[in-house]
Image (cartoon, rainbow, N blue to C red; front, side, top):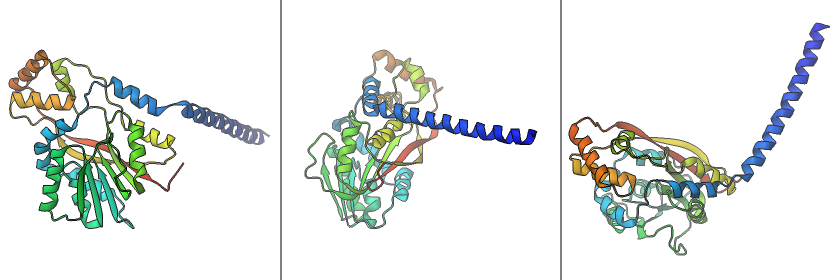
Length: 294
């Protein structure tokens, strides 16, 4: 009798647990539907301490950016993750110096690379010529521009370029030009700045919105994004002088530094106590398949 009672009791517990799980699932689904991740992203972006980088900022950055980008491990791993089966056209938006476009050139019939920085595009054209990539057309374009002349392509790349004010609007534009799949990378973590540097200048920062906003916005748009990661070696710092150290910090923060902050950075560098961190940077690698809808 004791054995039968135990069996009935366990079955009752299982049924009860199932009902609880069903209720939790219903509650979670209901709460999720009420969360506006687009609005949350915009609110966090507005609060972020990090300034917006404009085309003229990237124009100045272009020469140093171009130095190592063509041989970067990041670009190789990005291309290795892309499914090129059955496709012939590629749109590489925010193409920078053209590393991804050129790496994909032997796999595609036609590639269109766009960037809002004229200097970056000059390097992209030079690099394409150096590497013999003759099937790439580069042109200037920003997210805010009219995209009516941008061709729809089988694949679309949006690499490390979506720290925009209106993420949902940018995604809509990218997806409107995507025939098969959109590939996005987004930094994991909200800051490029070493915490030791922030401590040195005595500044507290409000972080940028992370990649989880991207995933949830895509899901609420009706897509089922897949997620993996790129782990790329990076060198935080590398300045050869106090002046360069200040310039690099200003770039990473995306804004101006006060005289006091610059003095503290110079003191930190000249003391010899700060050592640039050799570390890996993680990027969320997101694939959006146009045929895979929620």
